[in-house]
Length: 108
Image 1 (cartoon, one colour):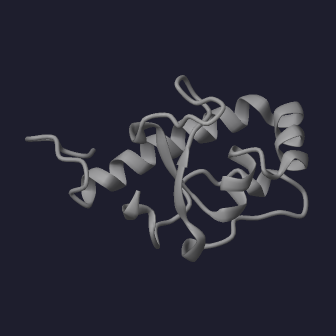
Image 2 (cartoon, helix red, strand yellow; image 1 turned 135 degrees about the vertical axis):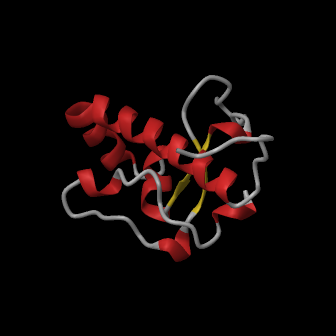
């Protein structure tokens, strides 16, 4: 989770919402994606984390309900695709920075 500090937002979903945009590298945290294992008072494994700025994190966590409802209604598939891309990009960054170590792995 500490690796998210200063990293780019890999989710980039806030920009789909009129009047919103990503908040910048200085607000990036590890965002637990809404996948299996996440529920009331529970978090998904840290392997289900993508780097997200404060604006994207607020949407993913449902704090920004207006934006979340807008995205689910207008861009549901695109939002899910962005989360998948963000997860993959985050894993590549974590491997590149030595946080996740897979012997003999090569990022292509």
